[in-house]
Length: 243
Image (cartoon, rainbow, N blue to C red; front, side):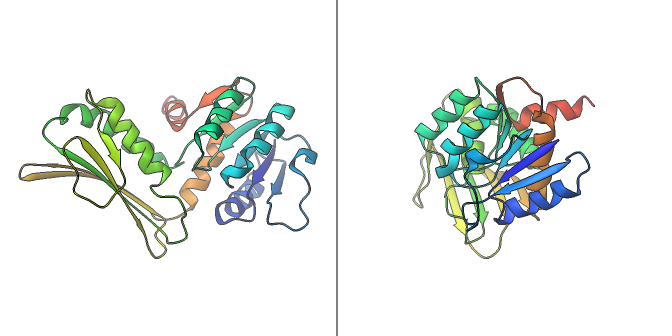
């Protein structure tokens, strides 16, 4: 199988490209990065079986155009899309299989599934807050993962909360996300349920970027030869649980 990594000069992109080259499943691995002075137009790249995107939202129209033209499976790991860009992605799933996730860690997927159940039980007795920490080079805040976790919680609640990302006193009707950008933190997400005289915390800490890389590669293998549609980590986790 042939793969194309978008953002291949970035930290995640270069790691994924290296791991793909070492994986016998892939016979050829190409890289594309707008920071490469010698890069050719994406539209001129040869057809591959799967594209893995760890780049920037501004490239999504070019990536979708290439993928639809070549009927190529697309794994999207980039976050921070506008509403319009998200609509373009949703429209493209009619033509190609798209796997999209804000976090390719299987641990985060376990946390996601746990939150679906926990949130139903403690809706009225606990305040809910999310604290997310990342390295000081990360641009977007809150993180895509924090937004995903907040959305998961709200979907489980009978009365969804107002998601805020401000350092101020939160009300019981709010779900506050606190973002920290410091040092070289790979990624840490804590969901805190605070009640009277008791606190429940669910915490996930990424100790290496490799967990995201391996997750994206598993997603790529899963997505090849799938029907057009929208796929997530939940689909991949279910597939693995049946093996």
